[in-house]
Length: 283
Image 1 (cartoon, one colour):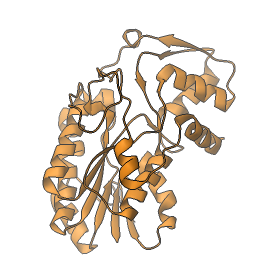
Image 2: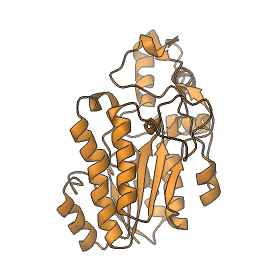
Image 3: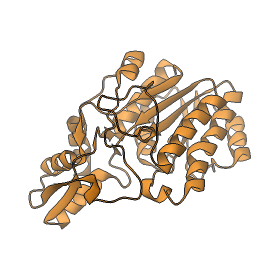
Image 4: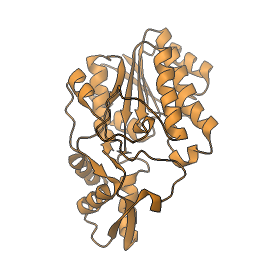
């Protein structure tokens, strides 16, 4: 198959590129904004047609959650309108699309892991635009796999793990919220899950993927410092109210992964196991 990867310079896009060699039967077109402007409908259609694209893995998104509160138009363009162009273009060819979404489509008021069929209720511009993106791609293409993920990190780009490692080495004390609960996701694991689904054949629908287990940002930070050997920084728990942010975060966003595991036979690693792997790669 000819597979288009968008957002190839991001965390997930980079991780997919690392494992493309394991799938020599496919030809990958790795693109970022310099290669393909996904907000240009004509450019998207032309690229998909000229390269006979059979499938798209859309890793491109506007993910600056707080900045999004003041940039709703741009956020909607990148998170909903542009993905609809991709879905429509590949849909016309009878192709498929994997579209990456987020736990922010939920408001975080649940107390049990979110399944794919639980009601969505985004409480931020970012969450609303990502939900709009889900709806848009599924209406433009019959063969769409939406993958909601959460707390993404990797060896690439800027992310929470890298920031906490840097701050842990720079500061004697650090405050991190303890009352937001979820599950970190190593982008390398998500890349493997997506390519497993692609290789087995896309079964359309919404799926959840994060690593196994549950934690808070505070406990996540403590684990990061422990694994990275950072011992000189005192990490203290903060309430969300003590750390004001422009955008609301889900207080609880643990994702139930039963559907993706049973549909594609995927084994999901525990978050601490994957964190050790990532930090080992950063050492």
